[in-house]
Image (cartoon, rainbow, N blue to C red; front, side):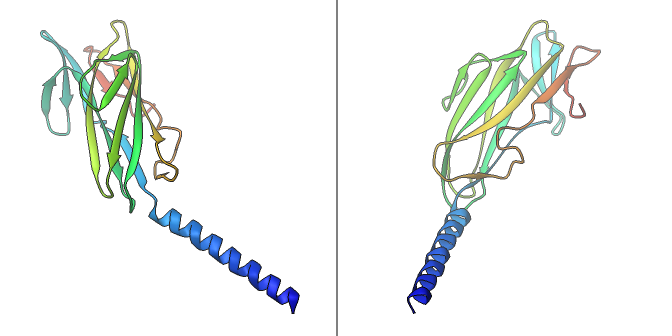
Length: 172
């Protein structure tokens, strides 16, 4: 009788633990993050411009756009870390902290919300290639990411072309 009571108690505790873990897992924020890969950087007589080949629009300066989306059931607080190789960030924007080759974008997202931030940078004078990479840093205990590599995405390389533009080299 006493063994049956202990076994029943152990099963009840196990069920409560599993139920609690599942409740936390199903309600925690799920964060997706990415960067625009539809930009080409072109040198003109007036300086560098960013050409968006998806919309066929040209804008002055060189920039990338970083996106973050909360697809979970609850709000989240996070930092999106953007790193450059062979390029340097220019200070521009209120929700970003830049320091040379690293920018930290602090944000709070509500469930279902998407945020995008444009980051301006300059390409190093003698660069034949530069890279942009993203890493997510959670500012709360529970958060999931549906990005395959939690430690960050593979850097996106931009390769110098024969006409001195920089195109995304997505097949490297």
